[in-house]
Length: 270
Image 1: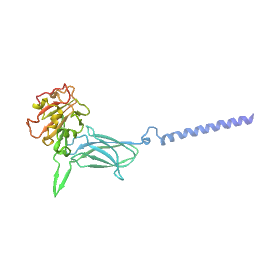
Image 2: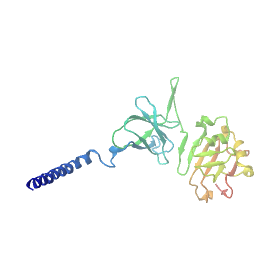
Image 3: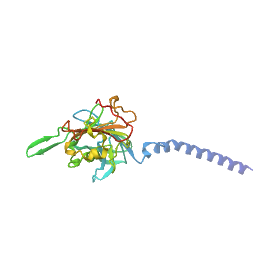
Image 4: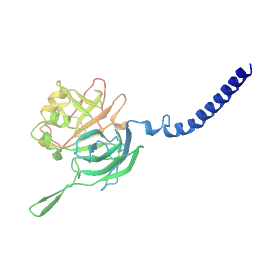
């Protein structure tokens, strides 16, 4: 009987010390392996904001890519939003962040991702320059400009559209698409109004595809994209306005106003 009591006592004491040892190890284990912490993340976010160094304005559609530092191979890519912001994912490692935009110098940022997200802050892009026989030629205007109520695409800066017509020009405007039937969409919506020099003319009764095909790209100075039209455009139910600005104003052969979807009116007093 005494032997049984001793064995029971030893068993209780052993279980006490074992449980004490286990509980003392838990805080250290939790410290080494945080649940839900960034140490367990397979990838991390790299974010920042891009602005024009000359105008101090933030602008969208800047191409942002992450390249491996050792061989410059592509890891991931994105574009900036309307506020110039971007966010891109990558795993731990050493990289190069490259920012490109037509008419601007490419910008490279060294990037090292350790165990946390990376915030790069504001990155400025500078207008590009080109040296030719000792003469420095500086870009006067970028391909895309941002004004108070619209985005302006300078067609003479876009060599892709050279030799085509207005349809070819619109196909190269960011956020604008043209299908095989000549239907124009802005940010995925077909309820968009297309203007030529901002006012109607004899071509008002023509279909949109015919009007666009009759305007050579060489006669177009710029394309204005208005995503939030003011009251003067009668914007009810309209997703936006695309205004094709010609180099020679008052060309009666091309001036016109065509609505891509039915039931949308335009105020002639522009």
